[in-house]
Length: 116
Image (cartoon, rainbow, N blue to C red):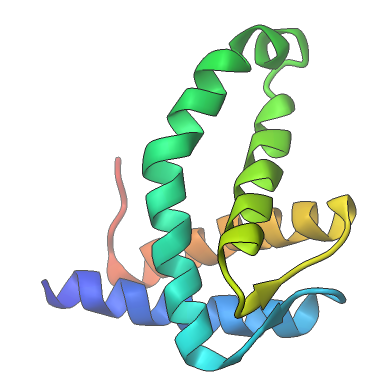
């Protein structure tokens, strides 16, 4: 339980920092970052598997690069669902998505949550 809370807090803090680095990403404070982490978790658990299923032929044709577009769609959905999170532009959403992947990797290393 402590590992989960630590992972959640670290991810929220790093997502807030990531929003300061990406040019058009805006989050209204650490509370907004925490809510964003929750919303992204829910979207990744519910919507992302459906998008992966429908996008499977395109994903195969692009050798997996279409998964990046699916991640951008998830980020845009979070933007539409939240008033405290705003990001504009496909490239900036792609950068945010890639940065989020790096953040998750760092948090997994810190918390010892390797899934080997």
